[in-house]
Image 1 (tube, rainbow, N blue to C red):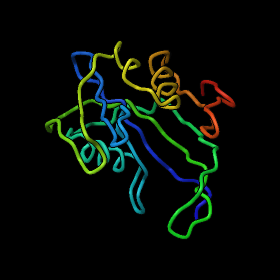
Image 2: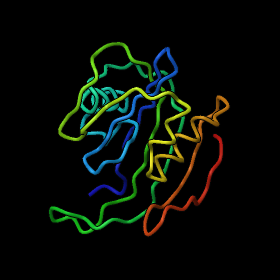
Image 3: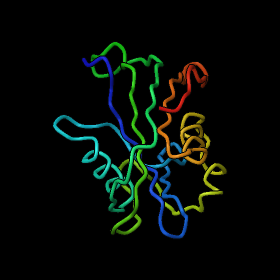
Image 4: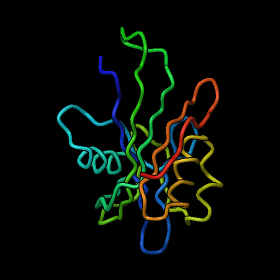
Amino acid sequence: MPLHIVAVGGIVENPEGEILLVQDHRGGWVFPGGQVENGESLIEALVREVLEESGIEIEVSCLIGVYSNTSSYAGHSGVAHIPTKVILDYLCRPVGGRLGISDETSASEWVHREQVLERITAPAIRTRYQAYLDGDDQVTYMAYTTKPDFRIEMQRSI
């Protein structure tokens, strides 16, 4: 089992200033993303995840955040513990496709950038989106835990 899970997230912004959000089956709104699969590059994984979760084709513009979720999670499928997750967030733009849903999502919408935080309830996702809003052309690095409660351990620009 690897020591880290690598994941990617995409803040997809259209020319109207709207951000792509997807709703997971637990009812929470998030920006799309997920785990990098064996043999994929980070960019390939992000393009695949956004398309799978929302139906939107994207072009990845730039890296905007690097995050370490250092929480320990109970495993499954014979794995005792799920390792630390390293997440890389990218700014993206839509280049095609149509809004849709998937096995992982129950809805997808374009939401005006000032209203996104009204939708996102998960503290880690809210914090990562706020870092995007507060960004000053530098990449944010943040280490945080989500269990038992969300807590930022370190934050800085890199």
